Length: 373
Image (cartoon, rainbow, N blue to C red; front, side, top):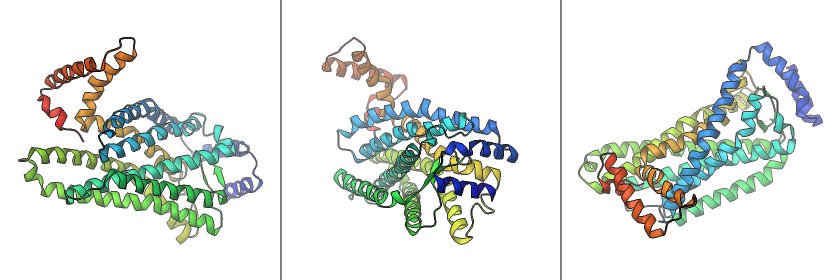
């Protein structure tokens, strides 16, 4: 109770966030919060930068090339890669907080605190929406191959959603008060007793829960449909190619669901505590783990983990991406490193090296070109 009243005074007087750091660090020691666990979290965030950032940049370059063919899935993958690159960069301040024993550092500046929170929430919601569009487009194609969402329709839906986010943050965002607390390790909206902030919380919960629910059911429909049509996929080469692309999206959405499920659970528990039991943290969030780790892991770390795993899925499931990475990209880089090559020479060398790469993996040369998403 003393801690909560202290935070209320902080919010009301708008003093600097660092004024309560020593108080909270002492409280952490009293409750037995592990410094080793904080360092482990910081290292996991660092992995997201070291591996996730270059991996998503490479994926972005590959899907940007594939988008020139007008493929809807490649367009959505490219947009997801852009969001993942931004996500891998946006969690840097949180990583520094855990290396610095949860001192606010950059979050001490209120403008940065607000800006970071709005950006990260936007990236999270846009990622959810893009995965939902990807899952829906593939599920529709599986259920009825003669019906599909065009690229123009997809972009129109996405533009409408982005416009809605801009209006939402412009109208409801100014009424929020953002705070940093040591238990969370990042900035977030404080629980102010206001109708507008309650509406904002409800909309945010829907923006997280609805796409996740749609993705989950699309995942189930695609999985069940794939199993019922398995016998056909063994006899028709074209169907095998489509099914492999569908399996890639199923794996992609499965990883997405697993990474976003903890935050959906946390949001549900938070709503139950706040609106049903009329108390927070209450019995659910009072223990050390739930108070000091649950929110940061579910809301920030798992989003970063998802962004870091996506390039791994691309490399594992998309043969053409592997060929581009091992053959086409080195050829392009050779031209940038002082050994310029004509476009025709690059194409001939690419075909030769692709054939060598495929044969070295004991595959037929045509398999690489037919195993694209």
